[in-house]
Length: 446
Image (cartoon, rainbow, N blue to C red; front, side):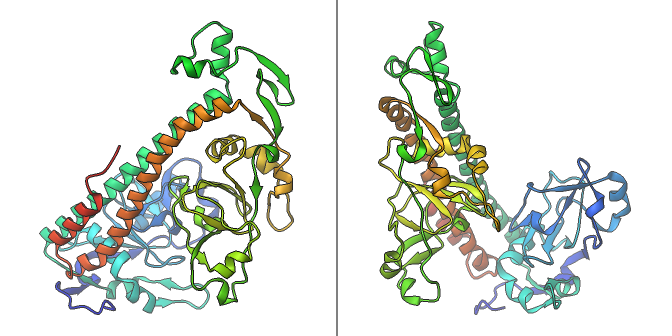
């Protein structure tokens, strides 16, 4: 319940709808992990609607054979017990053989599709889960509470249509994100070729025409090297401290106990937490906003759209180009437009030099790179014409990447808004399909 609506579909307890509700292996695992073997899922591998491949542990086939009870098969529904109780995903086809720890496992019966159950648990069961957590130290959601959970049970044809609609939204989001990874890789390869490997300079030295560029661009590269503090660099390019090539600023956090600094929330204000989950290196919005009074408390003020953000601690090295004017907290070094090297160039430079940047960090509680330690790092500054030629090309790629990320976020918000109403029967499928078509607007540029 908790939706304040009239349910269209009958509600049935999971115990009745499932063939089996059980729990993953509970026991110590530290000495059981092996380099390669049978994938072993933990709570942190389960995200809403998806199993995450990063940080996936493995166990030996022998140990897997011992843990028959917690062996997984594709189509099983896994629900997190501790950490983020109630987070739920269907075990995908690529996990043909797998095992797991501390998860509630559900094998659906003939009246319930696994995907439908995962939508229900993620989007509609929060109240049931919150009300049924047990444990003094660490709250967890147990098997008996899972069995008592009431689940909407529309006809299978309705479940299938709904799954198809959600899958089409998810596929579109995946496609946009894959396209973005490609766009970024193209820009990254260009940066490396021009400014790290100096391919066009080497080609000209050997009397060859530089590959993949017109004559005007090729003419911007010298045909020889000279010695610098960074070793052999293209003739006529300069080496200087990065702090002389760009303006780097830090930020602050207005007192969080003083409401006047946060209400009304007018200006975007970011902490590195905003960058921890982003799918593309662009920041479209921030979780928190500050008031005019709050902004006045931040020395660096409102930074323009296009600023490059680099987290300077906990952890060092998240990077994103701001797509809105924003203020920053003390966990960043921000690089402003208007310097010798534009933020987009600096984005790739920072990625290539991250080990060097991290190597200059220090700190007793956590590692941090200060602006004072960052500014002296030597940077190679090509001629203005070349920097302009590079940003002209990459700006076009990043404009597409940003538009794609906007659309991916719109779709993901739409999905999360539609789901609770769809699975409860409050919203009919044709209406949801129309809303999806409208959101897509037929404007997918790949």
